[in-house]
Length: 138
Ligand SMILES: [Zn+2]
Image 1 (tube, rainbow, N blue to C red):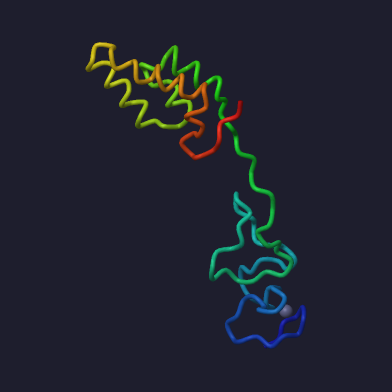
Image 2: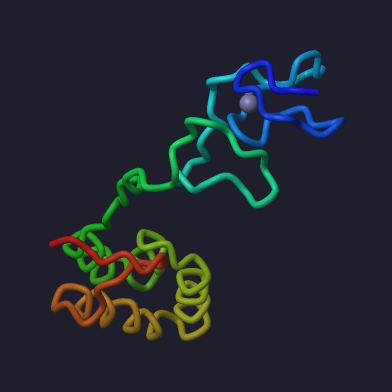
């Protein structure tokens, strides 16, 4: 059979034209031609094995904006509430935050110095990444 859109010869059983991406005539459930595959959240090209779709934009879209955590907020949280790991939760280090709560409890509060010091390190810039590796903003 032939593509009703561009005339390319199709193999029996092809539901999508390999050349123009149009749905082959009579194929049940085929998407209408001219519509690209829905882009995923990151604008990446379709997964390997997906049928080529004419007009689908390649994955060169701008990346989603990344929310940067504030260095000042993280530092102050560390100094004021560092014994409870609050600055760690703020930055996404949930496991370390939980550990800091545990250390503070086990050491009757002395371990809270850990979070306090990290608060200072955050303010002076020695710690400048969140759990995703995104730099902190000033
Ligand atoms: Zn075609």
